[in-house]
Image (cartoon, rainbow, N blue to C red; front, side, top):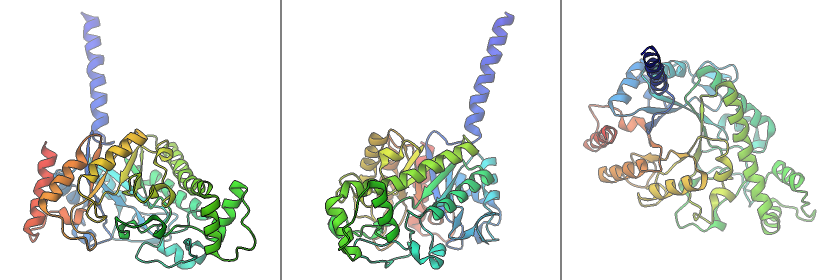
Length: 394
């Protein structure tokens, strides 16, 4: 009898430990979350008390928030690395509020997007296959090959892991430059800008693959044409290795700091058939290689923005899961982002259903400012809020 009672007590203790692990916070069985940006849309002013923000998230049926920890050189927490600070935003406090209320906290770390650094480092401006360095929208992305810059961004990721111990470190802009949001669905691959052919990348590529660009090729365009014609496979490998190696190092360093932190990477919403597998040759994102180092892949499946039907969310999620055997966390749009037109309530409901279907591990909705409680919200916004609550209750 004594042995039975002891066994029963051990069993109950084990159940208690398992339950505590779920409650403590490290990722729910299925994520239903949002991306939020306190430095945009006057959002910080609405939440001087972060407990209120988390209360509203939970009331909306959400169990997860992903938020940016910095932008450029400006930190949203007390940083010993980033020189500027937004004193209105304290994401250590938001992280504490989320932990207290058992809401998963994802720290979005912007890697190769950094307009502040580019302002003083013109040598980091990426060069396309035509020798063009022009930026066409707000996305001022940095050439991924410069070692000092890569170490700088890695140091920030490590600081965030040590300072906030987020549930997830989410690597954003973890790719070569491409304005994927602006590329039409029927674009021809050869018409898409291809990066980066700066002198540093050309030198690094030649050294890595023992390739010698003919000396008579005296312009960037001619050098790029020769590489893409004669050494295309090596060039793509050069690009994917640069992206994968950063993810590998970041994941290793973060897990050494806190093994409980999960690693996620934002993936472009391109299938293998999109623009001749441009996810690899253009963005440098080899998902099979990346999968060895991450826990989640999060494709930005803003289907309407990129001119696809809503069931593309389901098909791309399934493709990524099949190719990587990792947890896939598609991000979906709740509303119009650029000029693609409004997302109806019915379309949003269907998108959310597709995003939550197996093999998905959940979804992140872009973005919270549209879904937050607001007495002045339109009828459409309120209907979409109800759609999220209904999905959470199932």
